Image (cartoon, rainbow, N blue to C red; front, side, top):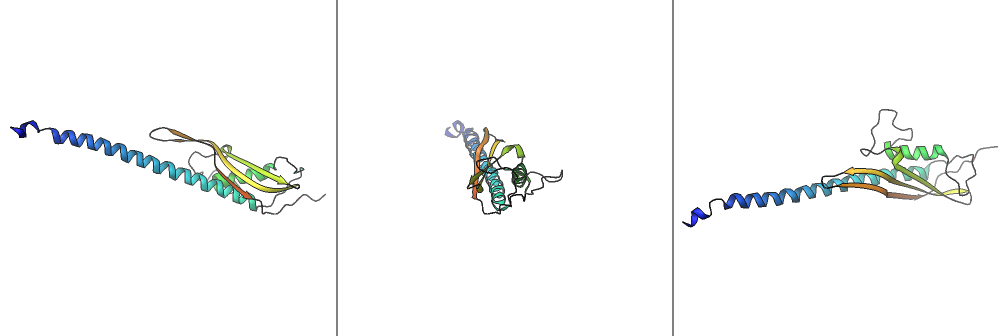
Length: 155
């Protein structure tokens, strides 16, 4: 008689155990995907900041506490998004899905009328996840000391 009372218990145990495992593996997958996407985003920001720190800075505007030249910023944004200073040209895909040049913030610190540091951060990019949404707000951020060449215009 004891066997008849336990007849459906193995199905119930399997259902409870399987649902716990599915939730666990879904969470592990989501964590791994978010980590992977953030890592790609961090590499893109580092590539842009590194490029900006090594390129020649040409500007006709005074550089004391001013904003950097627009061509300088545009090239850094293109390297961050597409991996190419000339931009996508309609052919290249962004290095990170959904990343655009409007998501890239570039700031240049000036000292003694010369660039001293280049910082690149990502803002406004949203990652849709299974359990929610994550948005990049000035993270990741990469800062490199400017080691490029300053080339003021010849007058």
